[in-house]
Image (cartoon, rainbow over all chains, first blue to last red):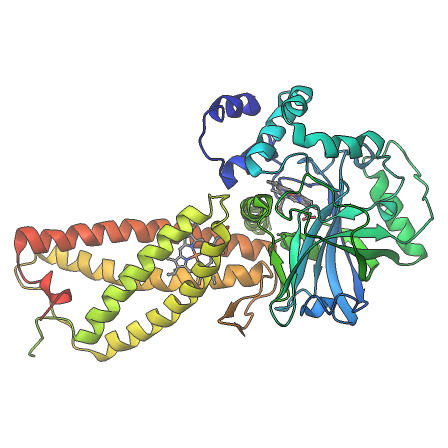
Length: 318
Length: 175
Ligand code: HEM
Ligand code: HEM
């Protein structure tokens, strides 16, 4: 219903606002206190062991050789916090490296390597198409979705969050001491070949259970791989993959040591706004990045208000 | 006691500088939270820097105010209006503290680092979702109250300047 109203409302040229985005994403069933996107997830924490291989490109502390704490979150796309995680089309890994410092670097990564479309307006139309069941038509009308569809046609979801590849999708710049910029994308690449066992396929949190059990055996590791853009790549367009021949460097290893449910967890107070970047990083001109920052803030505002109201009501009950 | 007819120069200067600053902060704030545009981040960065400067400015302003002799409203102004004027002035000082303080604290509660011209600013609050909710709502609602108060304030000033012509308007404009 909400989708139909939006379809009519946005058939004109009114600019899409952060509030419109979040209204559309949250859908008609508001899940008070939860993220309006990627609602189903859990908190993780551990260490980022930086190799220092990218220190020549960036003055960011997180990229100098050393060991740095992080708070993170693993989630699936969608606004329903109890949606079955095995059936989600997109899985995600978000990190805040060096929290509580001016050096913090936030990143939210997804399993697809590219976006289907290149602008927030078109992404909004894509979400509308999902809600109105007109996705095939949408893809047909937007040839730039080709690379995304190509990826999707042979993507096989794994049996574990620990064995997926998570991509920054949008590009950023690394900035060195002299102010020289290098466009990059990055991905978290799994470092385990243990495929994992799903104990209960029917459980809505089957993947979460698998991950929590896996952590009892020891930390889960990912390599953080940076791909450097060449003169042929357009950092502002997240629909086009960069050639595999581009230079690749390993920034270090994400070592996930603990996991906990999100309610009351440290990751819940954060929004993994991709534009919270330390000195040594800069956003690319990709318009999706700006839209993400604004929409994450609006979603953060709504869920924070709801949690505040719940606490006030809870306090009054006692 | 011999009250001056106008506000001291220091207060008039600070008044108009702050009026310009606060109005632009309000406009910036209200547009940037909606926009997905590429300038949104630039405006947000500017908003935080100028917002922190506004906090310093309001402290300075209060100090000047407490140390200066300010003009009394003329006796021709009815008692009720005198009271309303006092209340609006008080409201302004409260809101001009609440705005930048809530902005600062909500950034703390969201775990976002703040800095002023490269200088890291202290974190006064732990990262906390409910506290973020509290200060984010305060920032939003106090902004609306401030807009309301500004409208009342401008209408009252124009009433004195154009209709009553009793010198109240002049007291904040010139000698
Ligand atoms: C215009 C495009 C997009 C919009 C409007 C959007 C919107 C949102 C919103 C509203 C949230 C909830 C934020 C919160 O309450 O903390 C969210 C979370 C998230 N988004 Fe997006 N998103 C977009 C594109 C992307 C892209 C391209 C990626 C991947 C590279 C991505 C990855 C994530 C992840 C991983 C989370 C969960 C973060 C967490 O665990 O807290 N999003 N998104
Ligand atoms: C007199 C000083 C200030 C004024 C008049 C002001 C005004 C505003 C207004 C009107 C909004 C939009 C609120 C809404 O629509 O709900 C806003 C948003 C915002 N303000 Fe301020 N502000 C001030 C100081 C500050 C300070 C000191 C900071 C932080 C250091 C700050 C950070 C922010 C942020 C981050 C937002 C966006 C929040 C979001 O995206 O959810 N402001 N401000």
